[in-house]
Image 1 (cartoon, helix red, strand yellow):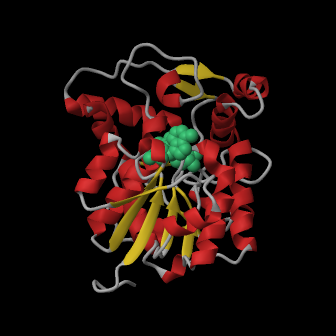
Image 2 (cartoon, protein in one colour):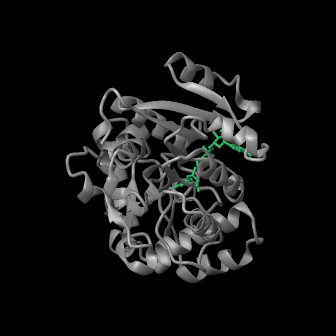
Image 3 (cartoon, protein in one colour):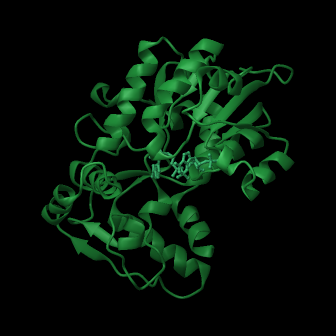
Length: 315
Ligand SMILES: NC(=O)c1ccc[n+]([C@@H]2O[C@H](COP(=O)([O-])OP(=O)(O)OC[C@H]3O[C@@H](n4cnc5c(N)ncnc54)[C@H](OP(=O)(O)O)[C@@H]3O)[C@@H](O)[C@H]2O)c1
């Protein structure tokens, strides 16, 4: 555990993104870390980067395609690397892992942040697994972190129109009977979990699963309706669009290899047909044998999905 005089320095790659912002916020709120955020040169003057600077966060320019000595310089003095970068950058993390190994980083958290699965089901999961294997192969300390599925992805948008997309929030699609449980997390809680995990020797060289509630799609829709009712702005405007498991499978098959749609539909298939995204599965050896973050940190206040829904619909 860190003492106030020996704060860990944590380098967050992609700290302006959705996951990265939550991580940076969690680290800053904890008061336990020196936070460094790695941003691409193209983003160095973005308003959100300037806001971080104003809050005392050190900004370092970095591209994963940089020369080794430049990557080493970006990680100088860093104890922990947290990668929360864009999905197209996954394979390039080997260069960052090599640099981390060279400069003596103690723990590397690669860009996972998803739902538990086994290999051979989701292309993006498999790409992330290659990076996990690589990190282990070079003897770099690590923690692999998954967070289930974001509440913001699962709760239906408060709009009448449904879109033709894989994302349940926008498509309003309920797959099958809507009775498959999924582990759901509110995005702002991700950083709170991370602030605990990286100050904890028990999680070094382990896989940790973070989650708030396990809910079916039917339960999520009930929560959405109740949250809207409690906010007092009229009923939820969305209506469910039912899709059969077979129809979903056809959509998975119709996607182009390597496309964004493939990532999305494979994810939905894994969650709603295979039922991969549960705490019980995450703990199984074939899923990586996760430690349960809720058991590790029982004191941590995690948002209920109803409160998450209220926050989302209030915006
Ligand atoms: N569990 C879930 O429900 C869920 C949902 C969505 C995503 N995820 C996962 O969470 C992880 C992070 O995704 P995210 O959605 O949080 O990230 P994001 O918001 O899309 O982007 C993160 C950051 O990546 C950087 N970046 C680097 N190369 C980029 C490029 N070519 N184009 C755009 N941005 C680029 C950008 O930072 P700079 O511009 O500052 O460099 C950006 O802010 C991924 O592994 C993803 O699969 C999980």
